[in-house]
Image (cartoon, rainbow, N blue to C red; front, side, top):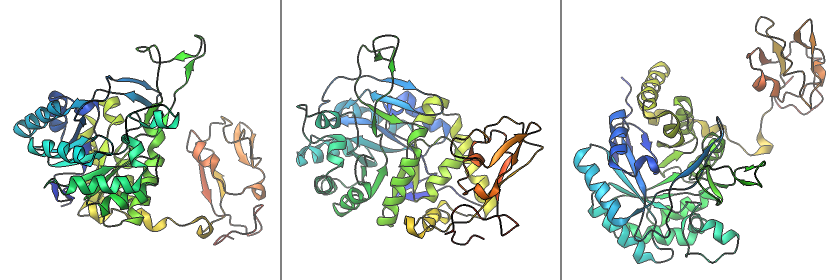
Length: 410
Protein backbone atom coordinates (compact mmCIF):
# COMPACT_ATOMS: atom_id res chain seq x y z
CA UNK A 1 0.00 0.00 0.00
CA UNK A 2 1.38 3.43 -0.91
CA UNK A 3 1.95 5.94 1.87
CA UNK A 4 2.16 9.72 1.89
CA UNK A 5 4.42 9.80 4.94
CA UNK A 6 7.62 11.79 4.46
CA UNK A 7 10.63 12.75 6.54
CA UNK A 8 11.33 16.43 5.99
CA UNK A 9 14.62 17.62 7.47
CA UNK A 10 14.11 15.29 10.44
CA UNK A 11 10.40 16.03 10.88
CA UNK A 12 8.08 13.05 10.45
CA UNK A 13 5.03 14.19 8.47
CA UNK A 14 1.91 12.18 7.68
CA UNK A 15 1.83 13.69 4.20
CA UNK A 16 3.71 16.31 2.15
CA UNK A 17 0.87 18.87 2.26
CA UNK A 18 1.69 22.09 4.15
CA UNK A 19 -0.10 25.42 4.52
CA UNK A 20 2.21 28.31 3.66
CA UNK A 21 2.75 31.29 5.95
CA UNK A 22 -0.07 33.74 5.20
CA UNK A 23 -3.38 35.05 6.53
CA UNK A 24 -4.35 31.37 6.47
CA UNK A 25 -2.11 30.82 9.50
CA UNK A 26 -2.30 34.00 11.59
CA UNK A 27 -5.10 32.81 13.91
CA UNK A 28 -5.71 29.54 15.73
CA UNK A 29 -9.21 28.93 14.34
CA UNK A 30 -7.86 28.97 10.78
CA UNK A 31 -5.04 26.62 11.74
CA UNK A 32 -7.61 24.24 13.27
CA UNK A 33 -9.47 24.22 9.96
CA UNK A 34 -6.20 23.18 8.32
CA UNK A 35 -5.76 20.28 10.72
CA UNK A 36 -9.36 19.15 10.24
CA UNK A 37 -8.74 19.09 6.47
CA UNK A 38 -5.77 16.77 6.86
CA UNK A 39 -2.62 18.81 6.25
CA UNK A 40 0.49 17.68 8.08
CA UNK A 41 1.99 21.06 8.99
CA UNK A 42 1.45 24.79 8.95
CA UNK A 43 3.89 27.64 8.61
CA UNK A 44 2.64 30.35 10.94
CA UNK A 45 2.31 33.94 9.80
CA UNK A 46 5.49 36.01 9.63
CA UNK A 47 6.75 37.05 13.07
CA UNK A 48 9.10 39.88 14.11
CA UNK A 49 10.74 40.97 17.32
CA UNK A 50 9.08 44.26 16.49
CA UNK A 51 6.69 44.61 13.54
CA UNK A 52 8.30 47.30 11.32
CA UNK A 53 5.07 49.00 10.18
CA UNK A 54 1.31 48.56 10.35
CA UNK A 55 -0.23 46.53 7.56
CA UNK A 56 -3.39 44.59 6.89
CA UNK A 57 -4.40 42.35 3.98
CA UNK A 58 -5.64 43.77 0.70
CA UNK A 59 -5.70 41.68 -2.44
CA UNK A 60 -6.70 41.50 -6.09
CA UNK A 61 -7.69 38.24 -7.75
CA UNK A 62 -7.49 37.87 -11.52
CA UNK A 63 -9.40 34.68 -12.21
CA UNK A 64 -7.14 31.87 -13.35
CA UNK A 65 -4.06 34.07 -13.31
CA UNK A 66 -2.69 36.29 -10.58
CA UNK A 67 -3.27 36.93 -6.89
CA UNK A 68 -1.76 40.31 -6.00
CA UNK A 69 -0.98 40.61 -2.30
CA UNK A 70 0.95 43.76 -1.35
CA UNK A 71 0.57 43.46 2.39
CA UNK A 72 -0.77 41.47 5.28
CA UNK A 73 -1.16 41.11 9.01
CA UNK A 74 2.16 40.34 10.73
CA UNK A 75 2.78 39.06 14.20
CA UNK A 76 4.99 40.41 16.94
CA UNK A 77 6.93 37.72 18.76
CA UNK A 78 4.54 37.54 21.69
CA UNK A 79 1.57 36.96 19.36
CA UNK A 80 3.52 34.32 17.47
CA UNK A 81 4.51 32.55 20.69
CA UNK A 82 0.91 32.41 21.88
CA UNK A 83 -0.26 31.09 18.51
CA UNK A 84 2.44 28.40 18.48
CA UNK A 85 1.71 27.33 22.07
CA UNK A 86 -2.01 27.01 21.40
CA UNK A 87 -1.44 25.11 18.17
CA UNK A 88 0.92 22.63 19.83
CA UNK A 89 -1.42 22.14 22.80
CA UNK A 90 -4.63 21.69 20.82
CA UNK A 91 -3.59 20.08 17.52
CA UNK A 92 -1.28 17.35 16.26
CA UNK A 93 0.18 19.58 13.56
CA UNK A 94 3.86 20.14 12.96
CA UNK A 95 4.43 23.87 13.44
CA UNK A 96 6.90 25.76 11.29
CA UNK A 97 7.44 29.30 12.58
CA UNK A 98 8.00 31.81 9.80
CA UNK A 99 10.16 34.66 11.10
CA UNK A 100 12.21 37.67 10.05
CA UNK A 101 15.00 39.04 12.19
CA UNK A 102 16.30 42.61 12.33
CA UNK A 103 18.39 42.86 9.17
CA UNK A 104 22.10 42.31 9.74
CA UNK A 105 21.66 41.92 13.50
CA UNK A 106 22.58 38.23 13.75
CA UNK A 107 21.93 38.03 17.47
CA UNK A 108 18.47 39.48 16.86
CA UNK A 109 17.73 36.64 14.42
CA UNK A 110 19.02 34.10 16.93
CA UNK A 111 17.02 35.60 19.81
CA UNK A 112 13.78 35.57 17.82
CA UNK A 113 14.37 31.94 16.77
CA UNK A 114 15.02 30.88 20.37
CA UNK A 115 11.80 32.53 21.53
CA UNK A 116 9.79 30.69 18.88
CA UNK A 117 11.54 27.41 19.73
CA UNK A 118 10.70 27.92 23.41
CA UNK A 119 7.05 28.38 22.45
CA UNK A 120 7.07 24.92 20.86
CA UNK A 121 7.89 25.47 17.18
CA UNK A 122 9.15 22.31 15.44
CA UNK A 123 11.10 24.28 12.82
CA UNK A 124 11.87 27.91 12.10
CA UNK A 125 11.50 29.28 8.57
CA UNK A 126 13.82 32.23 8.01
CA UNK A 127 12.00 34.68 5.78
CA UNK A 128 14.64 36.00 3.37
CA UNK A 129 12.10 36.54 0.66
CA UNK A 130 9.15 38.79 1.45
CA UNK A 131 8.95 41.35 -1.39
CA UNK A 132 6.83 43.72 0.70
CA UNK A 133 9.47 44.49 3.32
CA UNK A 134 12.54 46.42 2.19
CA UNK A 135 12.88 45.41 -1.48
CA UNK A 136 10.66 48.13 -2.97
CA UNK A 137 12.44 50.81 -0.96
CA UNK A 138 15.88 49.57 -2.00
CA UNK A 139 14.96 49.42 -5.68
CA UNK A 140 13.60 52.97 -5.57
CA UNK A 141 16.50 54.27 -3.45
CA UNK A 142 14.20 55.18 -0.56
CA UNK A 143 15.45 55.19 3.02
CA UNK A 144 14.19 51.98 4.63
CA UNK A 145 14.94 49.47 7.38
CA UNK A 146 18.14 47.39 7.06
CA UNK A 147 18.60 44.21 5.05
CA UNK A 148 15.10 42.77 5.31
CA UNK A 149 13.10 40.22 3.35
CA UNK A 150 14.03 39.76 -0.29
CA UNK A 151 16.91 42.21 0.07
CA UNK A 152 18.64 39.79 2.43
CA UNK A 153 17.69 36.85 0.20
CA UNK A 154 19.68 38.36 -2.66
CA UNK A 155 22.86 38.29 -0.59
CA UNK A 156 24.28 34.73 -0.33
CA UNK A 157 27.01 35.66 2.16
CA UNK A 158 24.60 37.40 4.57
CA UNK A 159 22.02 34.63 4.14
CA UNK A 160 24.67 32.06 5.07
CA UNK A 161 25.66 33.96 8.22
CA UNK A 162 22.05 34.42 9.31
CA UNK A 163 21.48 30.67 8.92
CA UNK A 164 24.69 29.98 10.84
CA UNK A 165 23.71 32.27 13.70
CA UNK A 166 20.24 30.77 14.00
CA UNK A 167 21.34 27.14 13.52
CA UNK A 168 23.87 27.49 16.32
CA UNK A 169 21.24 28.97 18.66
CA UNK A 170 18.39 26.46 18.37
CA UNK A 171 17.99 22.70 18.51
CA UNK A 172 15.16 22.50 15.96
CA UNK A 173 15.71 22.41 12.18
CA UNK A 174 16.22 25.69 10.34
CA UNK A 175 14.68 26.33 6.91
CA UNK A 176 15.44 29.36 4.73
CA UNK A 177 12.74 30.77 2.45
CA UNK A 178 13.96 31.83 -0.98
CA UNK A 179 13.06 34.89 -3.05
CA UNK A 180 12.70 34.53 -6.84
CA UNK A 181 14.39 37.94 -7.07
CA UNK A 182 17.72 36.14 -6.49
CA UNK A 183 19.82 33.27 -7.85
CA UNK A 184 18.05 30.87 -5.55
CA UNK A 185 20.29 27.87 -6.24
CA UNK A 186 23.31 29.90 -5.13
CA UNK A 187 21.56 31.36 -2.07
CA UNK A 188 20.14 27.97 -1.08
CA UNK A 189 23.59 26.38 -1.22
CA UNK A 190 24.96 29.20 0.94
CA UNK A 191 22.15 28.70 3.45
CA UNK A 192 22.96 24.98 3.64
CA UNK A 193 26.61 25.85 4.28
CA UNK A 194 25.40 28.01 7.17
CA UNK A 195 23.48 25.13 8.70
CA UNK A 196 20.02 25.34 7.14
CA UNK A 197 18.50 21.85 7.05
CA UNK A 198 16.00 22.76 4.32
CA UNK A 199 14.85 25.58 2.05
CA UNK A 200 11.43 26.65 0.85
CA UNK A 201 10.91 28.07 -2.62
CA UNK A 202 9.50 30.35 -3.68
CA UNK A 203 8.03 33.42 -2.09
CA UNK A 204 6.25 35.97 -4.29
CA UNK A 205 8.06 37.98 -6.96
CA UNK A 206 7.41 41.70 -6.86
CA UNK A 207 4.76 42.94 -9.26
CA UNK A 208 2.24 45.70 -9.92
CA UNK A 209 -1.40 45.21 -10.93
CA UNK A 210 -3.30 47.38 -13.39
CA UNK A 211 -5.05 50.64 -12.61
CA UNK A 212 -8.57 52.04 -12.93
CA UNK A 213 -8.34 53.66 -16.36
CA UNK A 214 -11.67 55.46 -15.80
CA UNK A 215 -10.61 57.02 -12.52
CA UNK A 216 -7.30 58.85 -13.01
CA UNK A 217 -5.20 55.67 -12.82
CA UNK A 218 -6.14 55.04 -9.19
CA UNK A 219 -5.59 51.58 -7.68
CA UNK A 220 -8.05 48.81 -8.45
CA UNK A 221 -8.12 47.84 -4.77
CA UNK A 222 -11.53 48.80 -3.37
CA UNK A 223 -10.17 49.09 0.19
CA UNK A 224 -7.15 51.41 -0.20
CA UNK A 225 -6.54 54.92 -1.56
CA UNK A 226 -3.04 54.14 -2.85
CA UNK A 227 -0.84 51.09 -3.31
CA UNK A 228 2.66 49.66 -3.15
CA UNK A 229 4.36 47.19 -5.41
CA UNK A 230 2.73 43.84 -4.83
CA UNK A 231 3.78 40.31 -4.16
CA UNK A 232 2.40 38.17 -6.98
CA UNK A 233 1.03 34.76 -6.04
CA UNK A 234 -1.11 32.23 -7.82
CA UNK A 235 -0.96 30.32 -11.12
CA UNK A 236 1.13 32.93 -12.94
CA UNK A 237 4.17 32.18 -10.78
CA UNK A 238 3.96 28.38 -10.95
CA UNK A 239 6.46 28.05 -13.84
CA UNK A 240 8.84 30.29 -11.86
CA UNK A 241 8.41 28.08 -8.82
CA UNK A 242 9.10 24.94 -10.87
CA UNK A 243 12.23 26.57 -12.27
CA UNK A 244 13.62 27.64 -8.91
CA UNK A 245 12.87 24.35 -7.17
CA UNK A 246 14.46 22.39 -10.04
CA UNK A 247 17.57 24.57 -10.04
CA UNK A 248 18.01 24.20 -6.28
CA UNK A 249 17.47 20.43 -6.50
CA UNK A 250 20.00 20.09 -9.33
CA UNK A 251 22.66 22.12 -7.53
CA UNK A 252 22.01 20.75 -4.01
CA UNK A 253 20.41 17.30 -4.47
CA UNK A 254 20.58 16.39 -0.78
CA UNK A 255 18.91 19.59 0.46
CA UNK A 256 15.21 19.06 1.30
CA UNK A 257 12.93 21.56 -0.46
CA UNK A 258 9.45 22.79 0.42
CA UNK A 259 8.12 23.72 -3.01
CA UNK A 260 5.31 26.19 -3.51
CA UNK A 261 4.02 28.94 -5.74
CA UNK A 262 0.73 28.71 -7.65
CA UNK A 263 0.07 25.02 -6.98
CA UNK A 264 -3.67 24.65 -7.63
CA UNK A 265 -4.46 20.91 -7.86
CA UNK A 266 -3.15 17.40 -7.26
CA UNK A 267 -1.46 17.09 -10.66
CA UNK A 268 0.58 20.23 -10.06
CA UNK A 269 1.44 18.94 -6.60
CA UNK A 270 2.93 15.84 -8.23
CA UNK A 271 4.72 17.99 -10.81
CA UNK A 272 6.35 20.00 -8.02
CA UNK A 273 7.54 16.79 -6.34
CA UNK A 274 8.84 15.48 -9.68
CA UNK A 275 10.91 18.67 -9.93
CA UNK A 276 12.54 17.88 -6.60
CA UNK A 277 10.31 19.15 -3.79
CA UNK A 278 10.09 16.98 -0.68
CA UNK A 279 6.92 18.69 0.53
CA UNK A 280 4.50 21.13 -1.13
CA UNK A 281 3.07 24.36 0.26
CA UNK A 282 -0.29 25.93 -0.58
CA UNK A 283 -1.65 29.45 -0.26
CA UNK A 284 -3.66 30.85 -3.22
CA UNK A 285 -5.47 27.54 -3.70
CA UNK A 286 -6.81 27.69 -0.14
CA UNK A 287 -7.75 31.36 -0.39
CA UNK A 288 -9.77 30.50 -3.48
CA UNK A 289 -11.26 27.09 -2.73
CA UNK A 290 -10.94 26.58 1.01
CA UNK A 291 -9.72 23.52 2.85
CA UNK A 292 -12.18 21.07 1.30
CA UNK A 293 -9.68 20.64 -1.53
CA UNK A 294 -6.98 19.13 0.72
CA UNK A 295 -8.56 15.67 1.28
CA UNK A 296 -9.23 15.48 -2.45
CA UNK A 297 -5.58 16.20 -3.27
CA UNK A 298 -4.35 13.58 -0.81
CA UNK A 299 -6.77 10.96 -2.17
CA UNK A 300 -5.83 11.69 -5.78
CA UNK A 301 -2.10 11.45 -5.06
CA UNK A 302 -2.55 8.11 -3.33
CA UNK A 303 -4.60 6.81 -6.27
CA UNK A 304 -1.91 8.03 -8.67
CA UNK A 305 0.80 6.29 -6.65
CA UNK A 306 -1.15 3.04 -6.54
CA UNK A 307 -1.79 3.20 -10.27
CA UNK A 308 1.89 3.86 -11.08
CA UNK A 309 3.30 1.42 -8.54
CA UNK A 310 4.96 4.00 -6.29
CA UNK A 311 5.20 3.04 -2.63
CA UNK A 312 6.43 6.40 -1.27
CA UNK A 313 6.59 10.00 -2.42
CA UNK A 314 10.37 9.67 -2.66
CA UNK A 315 9.90 7.05 -5.38
CA UNK A 316 8.99 9.76 -7.90
CA UNK A 317 10.58 12.81 -6.29
CA UNK A 318 12.97 14.51 -8.71
CA UNK A 319 12.22 12.18 -11.61
CA UNK A 320 11.61 15.16 -13.91
CA UNK A 321 15.10 16.57 -13.38
CA UNK A 322 16.82 14.06 -15.66
CA UNK A 323 15.05 15.58 -18.66
CA UNK A 324 16.35 19.11 -18.05
CA UNK A 325 19.26 20.01 -20.34
CA UNK A 326 20.95 23.14 -21.63
CA UNK A 327 19.43 24.58 -24.85
CA UNK A 328 22.04 23.18 -27.22
CA UNK A 329 21.29 19.64 -26.00
CA UNK A 330 17.54 19.69 -26.64
CA UNK A 331 16.55 16.78 -28.89
CA UNK A 332 13.88 17.84 -31.36
CA UNK A 333 11.25 15.58 -32.91
CA UNK A 334 9.59 16.84 -36.08
CA UNK A 335 5.81 16.58 -35.70
CA UNK A 336 2.82 18.11 -37.44
CA UNK A 337 -0.78 18.64 -36.29
CA UNK A 338 -3.45 16.04 -36.87
CA UNK A 339 -7.08 17.07 -36.48
CA UNK A 340 -9.94 14.91 -35.21
CA UNK A 341 -12.87 16.15 -37.29
CA UNK A 342 -15.34 14.63 -34.84
CA UNK A 343 -14.00 16.93 -32.11
CA UNK A 344 -13.31 20.03 -34.22
CA UNK A 345 -16.10 22.62 -34.04
CA UNK A 346 -14.62 24.98 -36.63
CA UNK A 347 -13.97 27.76 -34.12
CA UNK A 348 -10.94 28.96 -36.10
CA UNK A 349 -8.58 29.27 -33.14
CA UNK A 350 -5.85 27.29 -34.90
CA UNK A 351 -6.43 29.08 -38.19
CA UNK A 352 -6.08 32.60 -36.83
CA UNK A 353 -2.62 32.27 -35.28
CA UNK A 354 -0.45 35.23 -36.16
CA UNK A 355 2.66 33.21 -36.97
CA UNK A 356 1.21 30.20 -38.76
CA UNK A 357 -0.32 29.32 -42.14
CA UNK A 358 -0.44 25.55 -41.77
CA UNK A 359 -4.23 25.27 -41.34
CA UNK A 360 -7.37 26.67 -42.93
CA UNK A 361 -11.12 26.29 -42.49
CA UNK A 362 -12.77 24.10 -45.10
CA UNK A 363 -16.40 23.03 -44.84
CA UNK A 364 -16.51 24.55 -41.35
CA UNK A 365 -13.69 22.33 -40.13
CA UNK A 366 -10.00 23.02 -39.60
CA UNK A 367 -7.74 21.27 -42.13
CA UNK A 368 -3.97 20.91 -42.39
CA UNK A 369 -3.31 22.51 -45.78
CA UNK A 370 0.41 23.32 -45.66
CA UNK A 371 2.21 20.67 -43.58
CA UNK A 372 5.65 21.53 -44.96
CA UNK A 373 5.31 25.01 -43.43
CA UNK A 374 4.88 23.57 -39.94
CA UNK A 375 7.84 23.86 -37.60
CA UNK A 376 6.37 21.86 -34.72
CA UNK A 377 5.79 24.75 -32.32
CA UNK A 378 2.57 23.01 -31.12
CA UNK A 379 0.82 26.30 -30.29
CA UNK A 380 -2.31 25.01 -32.03
CA UNK A 381 -2.18 21.85 -29.92
CA UNK A 382 -2.18 23.86 -26.69
CA UNK A 383 -4.82 26.40 -27.75
CA UNK A 384 -7.47 24.12 -29.27
CA UNK A 385 -10.48 24.45 -26.93
CA UNK A 386 -11.88 21.08 -28.00
CA UNK A 387 -8.60 19.15 -27.75
CA UNK A 388 -9.12 18.13 -31.37
CA UNK A 389 -5.44 18.50 -32.32
CA UNK A 390 -2.67 16.01 -31.65
CA UNK A 391 0.94 16.25 -32.78
CA UNK A 392 2.16 13.28 -34.80
CA UNK A 393 5.27 12.34 -36.74
CA UNK A 394 4.45 12.51 -40.45
CA UNK A 395 4.21 9.18 -42.24
CA UNK A 396 5.59 10.74 -45.43
CA UNK A 397 9.33 11.51 -45.03
CA UNK A 398 9.03 14.20 -47.72
CA UNK A 399 6.91 16.29 -45.38
CA UNK A 400 9.91 17.99 -43.89
CA UNK A 401 9.35 21.35 -42.27
CA UNK A 402 11.18 24.62 -42.86
CA UNK A 403 14.06 23.74 -40.53
CA UNK A 404 16.63 21.16 -41.49
CA UNK A 405 18.35 20.50 -38.18
CA UNK A 406 15.84 18.21 -36.50
CA UNK A 407 17.66 15.91 -34.13
CA UNK A 408 15.88 12.58 -34.02
CA UNK A 409 13.24 13.65 -36.55
CA UNK A 410 12.54 12.48 -40.08
